[in-house]
Image (tube, rainbow, N blue to C red; front, side):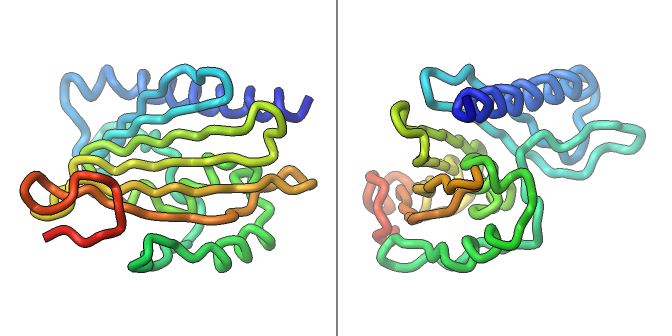
Length: 197
């Protein structure tokens, strides 16, 4: 039953984002706010959910009631440093989750967005994909890809977060990794932690 509630929670969350985005789009067509975030979602397939986010500056135009629709940060957490071996330390964030009573601690998507500070990216598009095991649903994998970076060497970065659900229905990060793809003629085209030139 809790799995069904969690799945409904993800679907409702994505539907809410789509509704808010649709409500903002009519004013955006005539005079785009100086700083808005547009989010569109795809219908979850099986046990996967996806959110695709495009970002532009975030200060609404005068007289505009546009709101940010990205599932952005809820705390003052800052993304930890990326290690050269492709790992990202998770212990400090798990300690934050231990003391947090926030609703986002019960969602692998929202916990990962908070951990990675998804809205801090300068990417043209950011895609988030959540996958859970259909049998146990006690584990989840979240992959965030920031594509179209305004960098002369790095074209895209990818973050892979593995989470485990605890008995109290909150999630903890088991591991987190990062990788990057270089711009054409600037290095590797696969996602690896190797440096670009």
